[in-house]
Length: 138
Image (tube, rainbow, N blue to C red; front, side, top):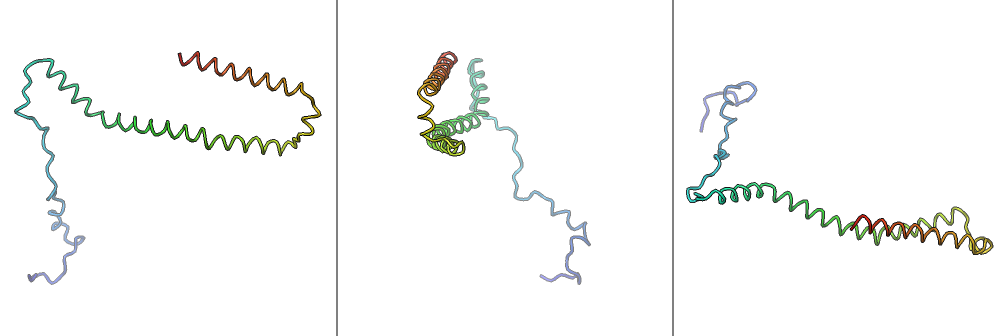
């Protein structure tokens, strides 16, 4: 194929020649909403049921995705709470004891009274927590 034009084609110099470049060749046109001749519902309840199922089909993928993410997050939260955070809690208590300079000799010299008060306070907090959990979950 020979071209009689001595200059090569340049889009910036010959802008009128680029009018065909913005065509949507190969891209299908958006079809109007499909209607089926075989879907002629006879009763009103059938039309309502079909309409509600059609509406539900619009949101069903989002609901399934949200449910799946929630299910995965539940199991992931249980794993993080039981394995990762338990180890961090033990490490935090050990580092706090080191920083405060706590030794077993000092604890033994204090006697049993501070230990009993701490144990009573821990039992009170635990009982209050269990009571509130049962109160709000039932």
